Structure formats: C-alpha cells, structure tokens
Amino acid sequence: MIDFSRRNSLKTIGLAAGVTYLNPMSFIPAKNKKMKDKLGVALVGLGYYSTDLLAPALQMTNHCYLAGIVTGTPEKEKIWMDKYGIPEKNVYNYTNFDTIKDNPDIDVVYVVLPPSMHREYVERAAAAKKEVWCEKPMAVTAEECQSMIDACQSNGVSLAIGYRCQHEPNTLEYQRIVKKGLLGSVNRVECAAGYRENRTNHWKQKREMGGGVIYDMGVYSIQGARLGSDLEPIAVKSAKIWTERPEIYQNGLGEIVEAELEFPDGVTAWIKTSFAENINFLNIHCEKGDIEIAPFQAYAGIKGKSPLGEINFPYEVPWQQANQMDQDALSIMNNQPMKVPGEEGKRDIRIVEAILESAEIGKRVVI
Image 1 (cartoon, rainbow, N blue to C red):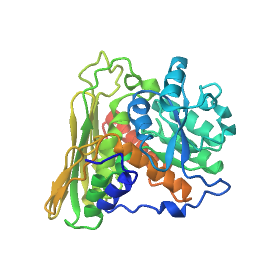
Image 2: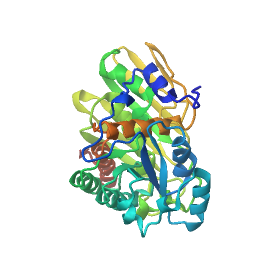
Image 3: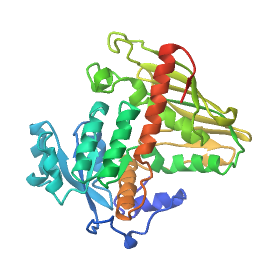
C-alpha cells in the first residue's frame, strides 16, 4: 500500500502507472496571480464527502492545503477550526460567502453541495475571482453546466470537475490499452455502478435537489462507457427507469436505470446504475480479448485484468482525492488546462438528459 507519510508518494504511484507529472520546481503562476508553493482551498459544504474524504486528503497533498470552509451549520465552525487550525477569518457561511473575494488565503473554492446548488456557488466563486473545483454531477442540466463554464471563462478562472477516477492509475491504464489499440478495436462495453442507499430523506431522494440515481451514480457508468470505448455516444437507443421502493423514490424518480448507448462504428454500451444493489464493474470487449475492471470506481481497490496481464496499482483511502486535488492544483500553478474541465461534466449531463428523455418517450434519442 501507499505510504502517505512520504512527501513524494503521490508522484511515485503516478510514475508507476505511466502518469506524467509536472516538475514542481518549474511552477509558472497563472496570469496576474502571485506565485505560491501551495494553493489554499476552501471547502463549500461540510457533509460526508468533505468531512471524511476531502479534508483528510488535504492533509496529504503537496501542492494545496485546507485554508477555509463555507458552511450553513454554525456548530461545525469551531470543530473544523480546532481540528484543522483554520483561522476565523477563513470561515464563511452562505450569506457572507461573496466576501471570500477579499481573502488572499483562498485560491480555490471546492463546491461540495447537492447538484441543484452547484451552479449558484460555482458562479459566485468565479465572480470572486477564485479558481473553482466542483463535485460531480456537475449540475442538473446541460444549460446550467454551460452557464458555469461561461461564468468561469468570463472571470478568467479555471473550472475542474471532481471526477477522481480520471486521475487514477488503474483507470489510466485501461484507457492506455484502449487508446493504443493493444487489444484491437472495442466492440462493446458493459458498465454498472451502484450501491444500496438506505437513506430516505437525503438530497438523493429529492428531485428538486438533483436526486435520483442517474445523477449521483449514473455518471460513473456513463464515464465507464465513454472512457472504456474511447468514443463519444451518438444516441441513446433505449432506456428504462424504475424503483423497487416507490415510497422512497416517488413520482418517477429513478432508483434504478438501465440504458443502451450507441457509439460510432457500431460500438454499443449497456449501462446500469442503482441505489438498490451493490454493483461495480466495467467490461470492455475488444477484438483480441476483454478488459475486466472490478471494482472500477471505488475509493480504493480498483483493479482488473486483460490478456495483457493484471491491472493493479494499489493505494489507500483517501489517496485518490489527494491525487486529484494535487494534479488540479499543479494545472493551476502551471497555467495549464485542467484534466477534467467543465466541458467534461457538461458532456455527461447531456447524456443523462438523453437517457431521461428516452425513458420517458420510449424511443431512441440522438445526443
């Protein structure tokens, strides 16, 4: 396993997986930005993901650190200040959030809120001239995604979406095999992502907050189909949305979703996502054999196999999140494009919209 006490641990596993890292000694600051050794990150929203994964990961990063928080729960403020040594001047709520523009300690705002709130806080962060990281799913509609992209562009700041797996070495390895055609061309992909969600009154069960499985877990299956084929879908051939617990997932809100995607050159993909069962695999059927990844999107333990051998670059939680944030920080510091920009998040939400439309009308929908 990875030794997180080593300063170079993130770089070490990346090199093992053939990942290209930037030289930290040759940082080039973004235009009109003061050079820093580390970027200060403010987490917006202190739910499970921030509390259990992002905050601990920021204690392991080499190129960014936890500088501030934004919360609507006053009792959390002192807990976080004491635990992470956050000064009071770097603590914000949703009312005074816009004054973050005057705080030189904060370089990046990481939006970790329910999807229905992403657009507002990404746009407010951009208006404050802060670099922006936004958790997946990017937003509820492709129109919202474009508005977020436009806001960041017009304010001269970067926007990255928190697709941790796109920074992850096992994912990069199966992508390498597909991109280089080492097993010939891809014929079909099958991908499933889900878990048994037992909460009943969370944002994931509320349509108005961006709930439903297709947004939360469905984007993983979509990503698996896209990255596994190295193609972009041209249509949703068919889709089905249902629930096994209508008392929880009400008025047509999807607990389980299946869809058949069409890609160029006759390539197809079957995807499934579920809040009813634990499923986590990616099968890529190539001319010369299959790539099998299971699990394909866990926080740790991602591994697989193909006729070329085992795919297994191990690490411990929350290395994935630390690696993602370090790579995004380096992109900012070197004034280079983000690996997973807003356009990537918008692409997936457009596919989500097509799946929802296909399920509603019972017909093929062109993307």
